[in-house]
Image (cartoon, rainbow, N blue to C red; front, side, top):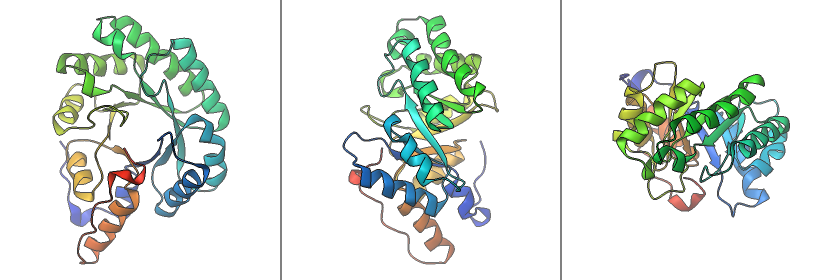
Length: 247
């Protein structure tokens, strides 16, 4: 596992681990627009928006170094593969460059590993053909450790770029045990994303130390302002409430 030296970390290092999440169903246009502007202000890795919000996010983030991502088969993963492929093509056509897709959870739990791999591979093929990346969401709250390990191996075999813990809409999100397991059961070129519950700088540093390179959150302002305060020798910033639209 990597060692995290806070003294050598930069704000850029922290910001580029964050996918600023704007996925809750009740978020209105103003919230999405404000969220994109916040993502640009703090220069995060990406925003992750609902599919219908991709064109607006692309327009707002034009000229920045913030990628626009969206979700496929969200949040349950039970759509037919052809539907996920259509969703992926539409998202890419609208300007998304990162896709977070949910696996066929029921198929994995039924032992239909070939179907799970084919489902992932179909989305990966479309995404990679457009130069986009795919983060594969397992929804670990519903899986046994054996199922999580199989999902890691199927994701890698299908060409996925990231393994990801959760949608943020299940009973639980990222846990340290799951992140250790996912890191241990994928090759080093497969990256790990934690989603669900990472709302503070300390929590982010903890998952980074476990090998995580992206998190899904909208506690972006709290995390980065806390980093700035600590670097300046000021008191830490209080954690943002979960009601801020985050995972």
